[in-house]
Length: 184
Length: 406
Image (tube, rainbow over all chains, first blue to last red; front, side, top):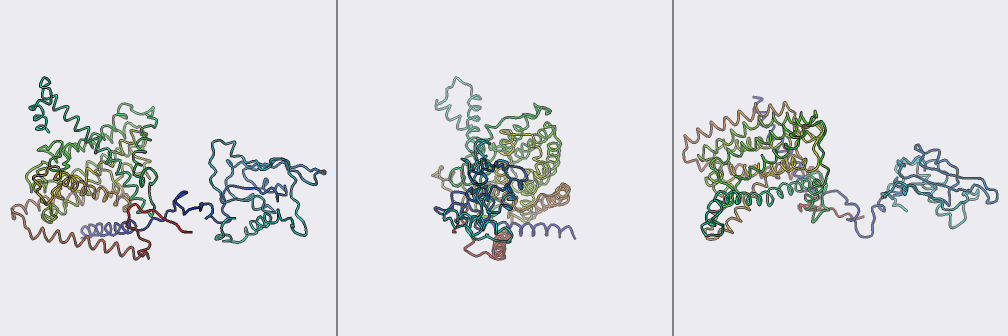
């Protein structure tokens, strides 16, 4: 009798399975269409969390030229050249290059950064026509490295950048931090 | 067709100096070309778009929606892309057979359109062996697939080809045996004859003629799916096991020809099922004075019925997993073949006992089918509720896209 039970099982289970798929057919699709079907003025990037690991960005104003990121990078896509220059008053950076073609978005460089100068952005549209143009040169002209002040930063031009960087670093240890806040 | 050419020759529209057979040949080529390029290729292409949209919605996605309105021109873009691809023939392959195989496959599929009725008057050739011709000419597909599998000189291709041969040869038997009851009821093999013996209303269709024809319909549909290499019987392709089966080494246009045959075959399956079991192009009105309107309506009815089965095959594909080879064989030889034989004997007995049919049985079967359909949609409603979905999360617009609010 298992013969007829097999037939019955086949028919009933297939019919029920088809009912399940049909019930999906009448559901609204959940896809968010990238990039042009969002409401006006909103980019997908704006909807991503603060800590989203997109393309790397360096805030040279608060970079201390400590080379921690260069050492942390597992694939050596960061190259920094810095020399001591008494006249200029500290380290002078002549080169800060990140090869985004090599970068694997692991986030290990932004973790040891003392000021949060190197950090990921929610930007992810990095397509380009040549490999060379994927290398980002952050130092345009020799720049004096930032020196943290014991009393805290008081320069109004640098303060918001530093606050943002420190918040970025501080949130490393907190699980779930920054999930809901929009990118700045 | 022949009458049309004869009439044109008699009226002097065609030069009489050319022999009549040349006119017939030219007319056949022209009409065949119109059907192939005007109907067969678009229907195969559009089915790919329909499949991808339906698949998308069944997986809570949207599907292709960029090329043309709602992505409708995606099939043209895909075809154009494949035409422009490099034509690669592997060095170790049997080049002659390798190049020939896609044409054999597509020929076996396109040739069926010669006898498929589009409406009461629109048919290329109403052969007196119509349905027999269809079953025999589709057997050409297995030759092409086996040819492709062998000529590719690749283990995946060969496995796919051998699986296909085993599968199609096996499932031809239940499919053929399920055609016999209908042929026995009508006493004709002609496609138009089969349709003429049915009526426009569901209870006049052969599917509800007696319980055995209802079973024959199910057996035939399952066997036709297996012959068309459709999921759950897509073992010859089996993407997750055999790369792409017999089509592994094919690229560009040759690969496209295989897939065109597969998708076009869905429509052929639907058309044959409609012809045999679902009353074909029959409409309730005679419309003797308006041949254009009549044929348009008949075409619409036939197309809608056939295309429902295309949808059904797509729907099944995204419901069922692929069966194993032994399960496929078990299903054919232990279940479908015996059931088909019982159907044949049962229908023969039915014809002997009730030569004029039993209207009550037709009504009861049609009613049971309607009840089954209602029960099915009740079950769909149950599953929607089970998922905790209300009216706000549902959309009955087949082309719906998502609007996100932040």
